[in-house]
Amino acid sequence: MNVLPDEEVVSRVVGGETELFEILMRRHNERIYRGARAITRDADEAEDVVQHTHVKAFTHLRQFTGRAQFATWLTTIAVHEAIARVRRRGKYEPFDDEVPVVEPFPLQGDPERQTATGELHALLEWAIDQLPDGAREIFVLREVEGLSTTEAAECLGVSTDVVKARLSRARAALRRALTERTGAAARDVFRFYRPRCDRVVAFVMSAVR
Image (cartoon, rainbow, N blue to C red; front, top):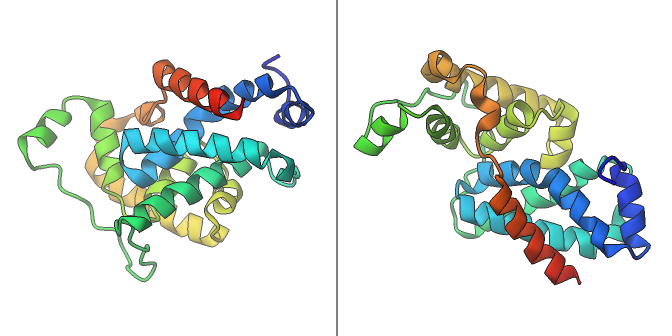
């Protein structure tokens, strides 16, 4: 069952096989969680965004036309929800595309940050959190989730040129501070582990039923 294309699963859910929506959730939970986590910088709120995204997607599933991939459509809902939340808190600052370089952030700091340098994944998550709003989510969608430039642009509602420029600057900001420590471990940040996935699936399936 899990090998069914997203579009076929969507069609069958719309046709009344509600229980199949779980396939879509488990298939895409990690991507939309990472996108939301990159924006909110809070794991619990990102989980709440994931839940809200799935409920909204299920409610409006008939509006999915297939012009974009289902994963892109779902990620766009999550990104909009996450940005709306941080903007309501007044904590989302528009990215300044006129600034020529994103300044590298210092690794030296309080004792908690010093401890984090000994644990690569924690350091990576902290480091990505330091990127400016507007660059952080692009870095996660492109470098962590592996979306194409076009897909990331569609999810975020910006041009492909903006994605390319901001990604380049985000890489530069991270490279100087983390090159020797990150290696190939970037894909392990903001993981959506099984207990969190199960919790979201249980909540959403209960809501849509």
